[in-house]
Image 1 (cartoon, each protein chain N blue to C red):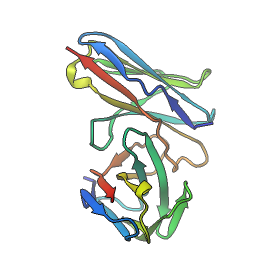
Image 2: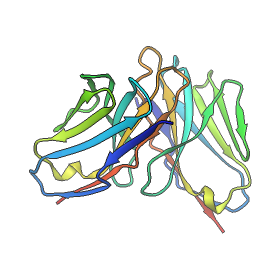
Image 3: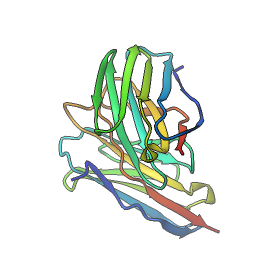
Length: 111
Length: 113
């Protein structure tokens, strides 16, 4: 079983829509979680960390559900510039130096 | 501030030729270092990671190898490239601690012909 699983999409949404991605992780002892954004042919860049209580950064909201072992990313009022691939990361315990990414979910925001 | 350098940006190599990609980090000490590969339209595959000089963990058996001769230098090598080695190679560094995220270099796009 993969350590982190994501729906690769693509998710095609109209401008202004709200879209949510989920990411499931297999290691119940995972301690920290992140969302990254990757533009086409570029390196991934940190979008936001995911905290236990959930956190928000502008139009972006990240949440953690430890019971069901998934993290989510909610994007409100989608912009054309949000079109990218969104990658999730779950760091395991006892070897948190090993960092594996989900396959990424591709988002295309349509005018 | 910390910066990560990765070169070259693009590389075209014939099948069977050797490979050496270098990654260096500035502004930090004893970073965790990572090599990833992303094939066209695919996810990030962790190839190697290193927690210190000379300490390399391999995630995927293949014809690639990695070395960390200095604290902030990470090298990816191959003696003989295969067509399947084509992809986008990314180096990343990360500090210590469970709440610390990774920072990526700008990547090397390798095409094996």
